[in-house]
Image (cartoon, rainbow, N blue to C red; front, side):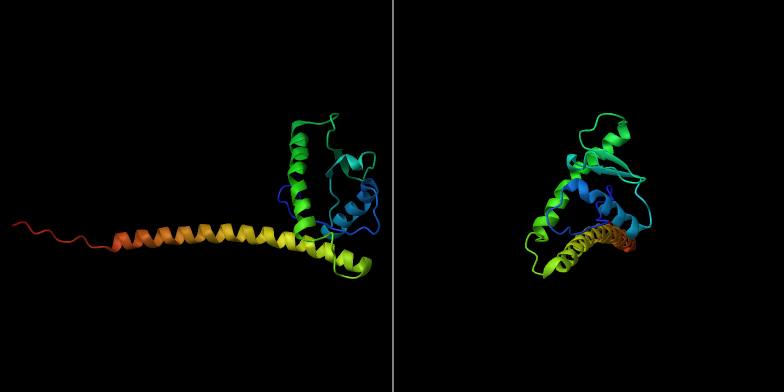
Length: 155
């Protein structure tokens, strides 16, 4: 999902296929996992000339037919590129210790799951911080309200 940053599909391709030749398989995997055919896909220039069935493909640098909302979504794709790079380095996708092509595929899926779990935990941390701040504010206001003013005696 390009707005939340969640990994929807992750697949290991045996060998070293050209980017454009993997687009159909990637869109097919997303459709299988989500039961929804993606309406739009924002890709880099390696996918130019490779369309998807029922999916509008927008290539970075494309000028024709771009409205402001599509330009914004295409710029959002540029912010997801570092996430892909972090998954490759932090997930150690270059050095898979599992054996064979099945091991590579399992390792890639686990790396995508790990990325999603990190995002979920970050959201939960923010939620817990807001809840604690609210509770702390409520406790402080209760304590202040429960204090009895000391009687003043005039002499």
